[in-house]
Length: 422
Image (cartoon, rainbow, N blue to C red; front, side, top):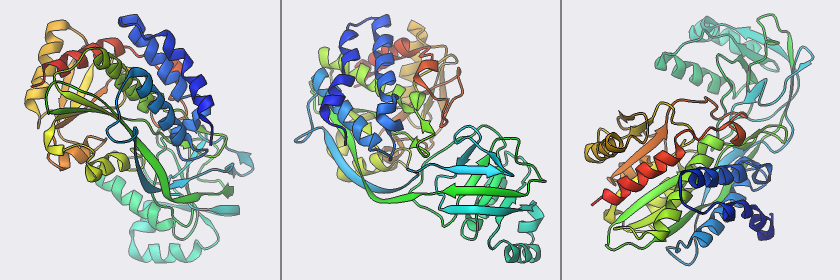
C-alpha cells in the first residue's frame, strides 16, 4: 500500500485554488479530477489498492476543508466480493493480436482461459431452438463459441442474449463482435470461462481460431470504505450529499479506466460544495458521503443504509451526484416525479438565474447510489449532466478531455437549492 506521504504530495494542487469564484471553482474541480484519474490511483478499482488510495486522499481533503467525522474517523468500512483482472490479457484472432480496452474487453464476470481455441460460429437459431441447441452444446467442448447475434435495442431480446452468453460461459470461452463502443463494468461473481467482446474488424464470420490468455482473480470480502464527513447546521435535520469515488480500475496492467466523468467529476462537485458550506454555515446539518463499491452494484450505499451512521428518519434529502462533467444540454433529475417539490424548486432557481440550459425530469430508476435510500423511504434525487462527450465506462473517460462545461454554474445551482430546503 502507498503511504500517506504520497497522498500528501497529491494534495498540493488543491491548495492553490481554494478561492471562490467561477474560475476558481472550475480550476479546483480540474485539480481534483486530474488527481483522482492519475495513474497513481489505478483507476480507483480493485487492483493495486486503487480504491483504497482514493479513500485516503478524500479523507485528507475532508481534513483540509474542515469537515468533522461522524464517528472516530472519516471511514465507514465494509466488504464485498469482486472479480478482478490483475495480469496481462492476451487475445489474438487468427494471429492478429488485439489491444485491451481498444480492440476488446472481457466481460466483468469472466473466468480463466489459456491456449488456442477453434471458433465455432453460432447464429440465434443454433441456440434458441432446443434440438439444435443440444447438438451445438455437444460440439463446444474444447472450442470457443463465436456468437453472431443481430444488433437490437429490444430489452427482452437483449436479456435473452445475455442469458445465453452467461450459460455458455459455464462450458467454454465465448466471443462476440461489439455492436457499439466497448463499455466495461464490474462484477461480484466469476464464471468458469471468459466472454470476450471484440471491436476490431479482425473478427469475421470466417475467423478460424482465437488465442487466449485470460486470468481473473475473484476477491472474496474486498475491503472498502465509504468516506463520511459533516458540517454542523442549525437544526436536527440532515441533508446527505453523495458521490461515488470508485471506478473500474485495471483490466490487466495494459488497460486502465480513469473514470473522469464517472465519477471523479461527482467527487469534485461534492468537495466543492463541502468547501462552500464549511465556510457558510447551512441551515441543516450536511453529511458528505464519498461512496465506495457503486460500480460493483451499489455496495457502499447499500451498506450505508444497513449501518445507519445517522438517523435515516432525520434525512430531509439525499442528493446523489454522478457524471457532473458536461452539461451542454443541461441536467436530468432522476426520481423527480416522486420528489416533485424538490424538482420544482430546482427548476424555479434555474429559471430565475439561468444556470444551466435545462432541468429535465425523469422518473424513478435504480441506477446509482440514491436507490438504496429511495427503497428505505428516504427522500432522494440523482442529478447528472447531459450532452457533450460520450466517453463512459471506457478507457477514453479522461481528465484532459472532460470539458466541465457547466460545472461552476451547476455548483451555484446546488448551493442555492440546498440553502432553500426546509
